[in-house]
Length: 501
Image (cartoon, rainbow, N blue to C red; front, side):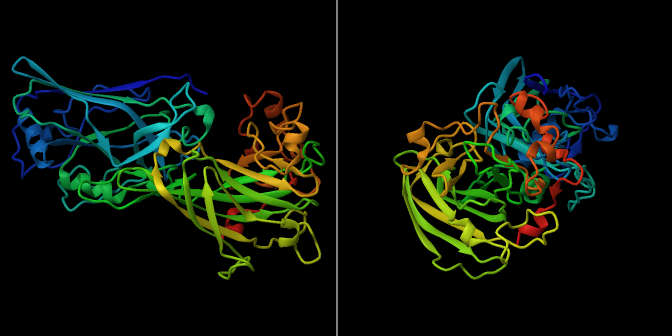
């Protein structure tokens, strides 16, 4: 893990000799010569273009400001090393602060108001609570084509826009500086912090026209696969935004060992569920609805379970909606659905009840966990509730929230490590059993990536994944990617392409 740091990017504007000013109607997006290096810092002269004949002047900057209705707009090529959910098709960083400083006639003017098209809830390094930060999201693609072949956005790999309002004429500026601090995120929390951390750096920066900025904003490269994206409302619009956890395309995998407080066979496939959550935001960025969907992926336990998804909300929160469970590979609801959902305070839905009776493979009680067993589709659920009164995003607990089992045979709840029992009828409180790890640190519930391969029935998780034991013994400080290295012939390839229907 890299050491915490704050990265400063200084984009320095100084008058270029010999540059001819452009009129506001003639400006074209211009790629800059200087780049941000691999350390994440850079000093970029905005007047020095990548092609010398396109060098700019202070008057040209004013033309860009006029063209953008009193703003300077920059395009950024987001170039991040893969971490967490980051990949070539979706990468991102978060901005902590940004400030423009101009010197005009010996007087210094500063502007620190800025915006991007997206924001997210992120915890900075050293903190666990999340706050809202503007983000820049992109992909590893290229070939952005605008209507103007003179634009340096044409055929480029620029991704996202950064806008800063400037309410003075800057045509006589002798020096101007844009300082940007990217957010150093708390990587220990996983995603979204891993996704929005700064780990590699921008390649290029351009100053852009209003039409090219609008083009990139509408294209939104990488946004669909990014986690916890909140789309910032454009002026004059009021549609609600949807924020997905972990992303619009991906699911969390919740897997359990149901013998708690004993480890049992510890094959960690007793119930496996894929799920995701979404929130609806009003034009003010407050939560007005909460929804979710998911699938039964596998069931290798002999016990009978209920699977819950709990989202802790303030005691004043309330709302209502519906929960629907669908038969496997069908648009037909299961018997007894849809059901009404009403809540005050915490939202606790129970999508899958009595799983031993709900889902079997013919006469075989185990589903999708035996070595030679043919895979079958599982039940699917979806729910949506509307809040009686909107709440701030900061009132939403950290994802992946609280997916948990109630085991009918033992009377115990099984939560993720560190969570608390919540049901009044369970044995956990009576027996003083919580925390949901044993004395050696072995968990009984975990969240895993959706392409995780589950252990074959009766094969211990430590045998299926040899690095898992080191991960547990170290308290999670080493081999955190243990789930990427399964042992040979010890796992069942229940891939997302099968269970997502």
